[in-house]
Image (cartoon, rainbow, N blue to C red; front, top):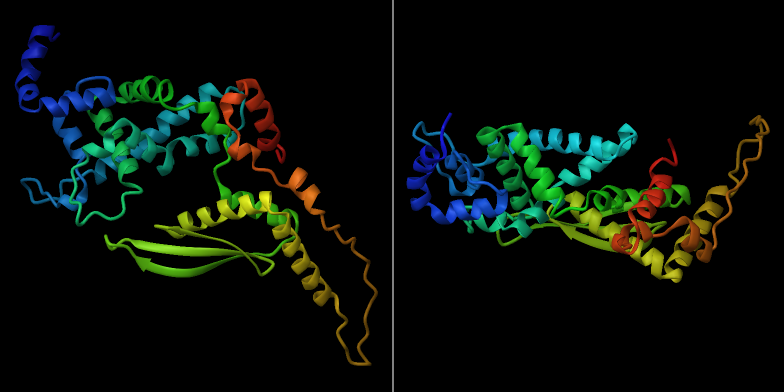
Length: 326
């Protein structure tokens, strides 16, 4: 067994040379690295274009791949034990929210990981995924340096205990596109996404602009560094308009009424055409704007502050929606 004095002797020299890095990593991880080279690589963005002695690229992409897999296993384990009795669909959704790029990116920024990344600012594309990728790479480095148990301890003690409220994240509705699609399908409203623009920014990163149309009525537009991101932004703002602007809803359902009238207009047919009577189908009532806002559409689950409610209230409200179709 390695005694404490021998261990200190082993880390003393590199600690003196790289005291700042060791100190920064300790603040992030809660422990000192054993193999500092792994963590250096985890913080090395590909834009630096560094290579090892064999001429192979030296960056954090491979550690990111490993960390992604480890995170899925660790967070899946935590979610499974935390939400006892919940079904597979709920557990999968909760895990995906905890390990999605947006969540990891916010963690990386809050913990100072983003500032530690070594990168070429001129060649680096937009950093919306930069921090999240580095976070995954660090998890991969922890796994290789200290094992699965250390990764579990890091996520439980450092992340979920101090930085993330697992109940708040698991029960919070964050997929605005899914929410808008659900609303449009429920109310039989035609929803269309139109790409208005595709360009590049000053870092040569692609930029997309999408706009939403509901029954041909212009909704909001969204800008992002991917089609998904731009559509999410457009959906979020359109949902807010549906909630706050009754006249917007009136315009949508007025356009829907005009469309359905045109579709129901009789079509002339040849005299010798033999038709068979068909059963009448009930036509769904068009919901009044007030009812629509009160019952069929609400952003309470997205904008409500969980701190104003107890954990039991959050779970009770969310379970009704989570398992409504189960």
